[in-house]
Length: 175
Length: 168
Image 1 (cartoon, each protein chain N blue to C red):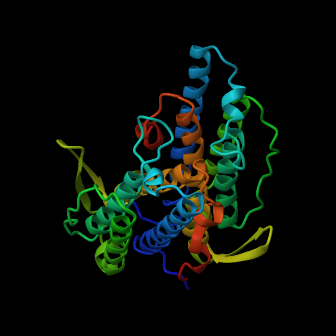
Image 2 (cartoon, rainbow over the protein chains, first blue to last red):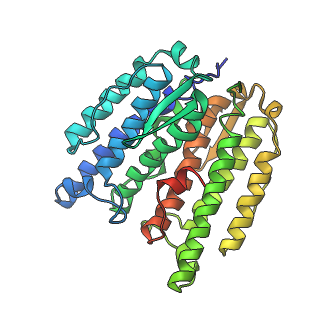
């Protein structure tokens, strides 16, 4: 029997998608090697001039994942800046985020459903939402937004990604 | 106090994001009008030659929303033919699917986390329980196609920002 909870609705999904991001980095590196281009060109690519580049889409997606898990668990998220720029740094960041997701207390997260969560929106604005609204209305759409944008920037630049690279290990989500 | 359950993490999310998708399409239409070009150019646009067009992204996103609600409730999925060629027709499809999603009530999804769900894809059959279907299949697919629709519009110069994706 699957137990539905805020933890089972969040942690496995973040874990799957973060692992997928690592696999996208593999494919980006392979593409750069094959085409004999500097992988930096892909890390700095964007769909349009006033959009964040690929590397920052990963920076932001991972920030949303760690902030979400920590805040739902009632902890202060570790403040690591969204400035990772190389493949090695982005990988380390994804690994660090995976560790945070894995170590967040399921009990603490499940107690967050109706607990108020106050978080910063930009430099000087704060917003307070219940745990579930924070997760469903803010954290999850933001996370998917940046994850999908990272994927589609690589895709638009010819990296051999397909939908299954986005879904990744969907089939192995724990029951 | 609102209980968090399978309904709370599905129906309101689909409705909110479909409304946002509708507003983003409206901005695309307005952009075409301002720039004096046929909006079909946006609807047929894609990010890479082997990707789906904006029209198809909207069709698939709406399919995931109605498919998820029906499967989680154990109902038949209401088929909608993929024949839209204008923004107005796509808006009508989104509106219809919002109506379908809203026709489900919380009780329809009671215990849905344990419902056995089988998805046929070209190469194989995927077996899920309701929770892993929603969190590992339907929701990422849904967000994927809504974000792709956003990305295609954004790439084509429509004045969109993350705010449009998050809230309308």
